[in-house]
Image (cartoon, rainbow, N blue to C red; front, side, top):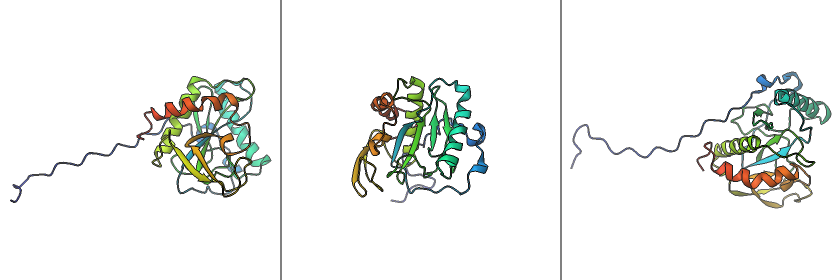
Length: 221
């Protein structure tokens, strides 16, 4: 039986819209010296995990000074470490402000230099301050990390409370080259590399950060 003229089929349910990005202070806004960056960024096929770090600098900074702290890290990573650009993909300060790190597009899978052996699969976010020697991550900082990680992983269809198996691309002191590592999709630097980073206090907060990321409005996973 032909359908009457003008009849329409029921519409398919709409897929959940990708959440908008959290507020991120751009490189231009924090005053990056782009003359330090010689080469264009390189990109990953996918971001499978987010590694959480700390900068291990002072906790006694005013949030108004956070852009200057990030500028100093850019200079250090390029001039002292010899890298092409800042190593981390993002920074968060204790007031919960998120800053763009390595250039290439906050919504793009930019390859960073933050978690040796796993840079080919991940993004890195670093909390300004030292969370090994007495620092305690603020509620605002923890929520900002959760929202940022949830959003970044959601872009690639990855759940923020999931686990992922990755292959170490180098000997990290935790994994040997070629060894399979099963990690949380939101992990600490020390989960993949032999280091104290992100500091015990921030590392201890990661389970709560994962839970907050799972409940974040920036994920559909």
